[in-house]
Image (cartoon, rainbow over all chains, first blue to last red; front, side, top):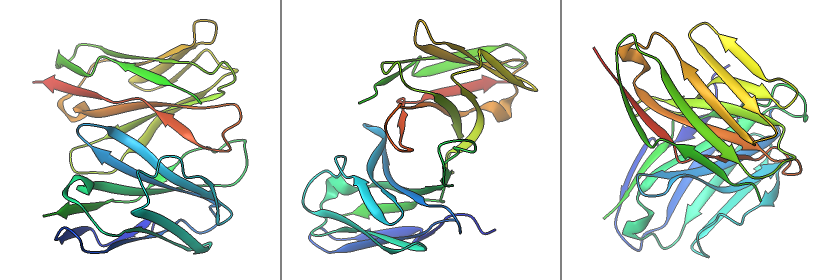
Length: 116
Length: 113
């Protein structure tokens, strides 16, 4: 298994531009999480999906952020318009189904976003 | 929702010494407590986890203890090695959060040779 796949790995853009981050979860996993990591705020949960349905988006900072999961194998996180304070590493993670073991969240390699 | 506090934020030890990282949680219904290790520039990876029906779990040099009454859990690393240097995150899964984990702020562990 290739694990969670994220693209791009690095993104440099200018303020005001639209940014789209992509994630492919591990096959068979029905939970998908988007996190943002910064030195100041640590690892923050932005939104998570179960069976392609958004369950909790209370961590999305503002209306500039949106996330979709059109099918079980693909999700996007979009920032429009981007701002310098959005600069961070964005991780996608997925988890197998069920409340029993295993509960491990598997993280992707992350996308390092820099907004100039 | 759940609130996880983690201490200390930084920890420096000499190679061969033990390291202990402590976390507290607020939701008494939380039932799953994983620990993740994140090396510089890498993704967080699970190193050990414990369920609420177990008090202690060991895996070679690492162990986790859970005190449900006090609502705290700890990571213990013995015989530390330089390759243990990383950021360690504790997390808790609440009783009704459908798979969501609440993470602590992380502990930067540095092991000096």
